[in-house]
Image 1 (cartoon, rainbow, N blue to C red):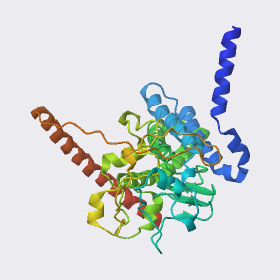
Image 2: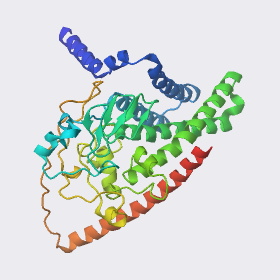
Image 3: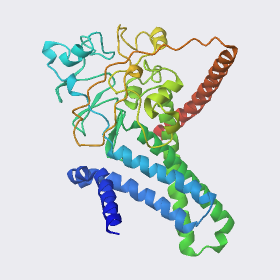
Image 4: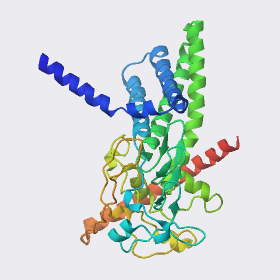
Length: 379
């Protein structure tokens, strides 16, 4: 018994170490209030479904599965460091590009440059060169790789390393509130005459809350689906407001765009595990997009591609940049054997048709979500 108790204590200590206790202690209470509010709202949704509509079997599974996935994704997006610029990018702008990057990648040239003189982007606040798609976050007081936006409701910046968990939280939170809303409306319609005054009040309160959350989260999630389908961040979308707002030089096709956020393993896409593809520093560009609109990027040669880089292990929040996040040496692409057999050709043709079909469906869905989101902004 003593040995079992000791093992249980060790497991409890391991779980406690995963909690961002140091960060919670450092953060002012005012900045943590939105996080506490979101947690309280999700707790209210759970209480409304579990206590006002006691369900079992598939109904309970249909609610608790997305609810648990939503809360896990929310915790990971809150606790995960969004990704800091590696120390090898630090240097003096007066002496030219960062020597650490040039020494390791002699042929590398950034795609995004200064508008005035076309030089490498440099952050005077952090004293470091900025890789492509990196931006300075005032709340974190440092640059974030592939910064999407700072979310006060998350208490964190949405960047390269936690964008997947933020996206999954939107997905499962929308599913959870929609399921609870539908069940509450159904229960009120079928059994409303048997409810007491307090029960009817709680049910109506739950319907109002879940309807509001679904109507807000739904268009917002569709908007982010559209951004992911085009490999855009919120910052990049806002910078290109107009005819070219939804055109991205990093658009590599629907499948590759999803992999850049949700990860290489398709089986892990819908679970809050794993991480994005690449290292967040080097990004592949679409030659088709460059030919279509040469204003999007500056043509360069010898650019290291993100899909050629080895995967960088994820690290949890430390409150500071991850100092040992050195960029990985791009690996050589493995040549694929030619597919000359009839079966292989048939499989390739079916895969291309399936990919085109999914691309059309995703494009239609994301266009609807984009229109709904624009209408929601007008309101």
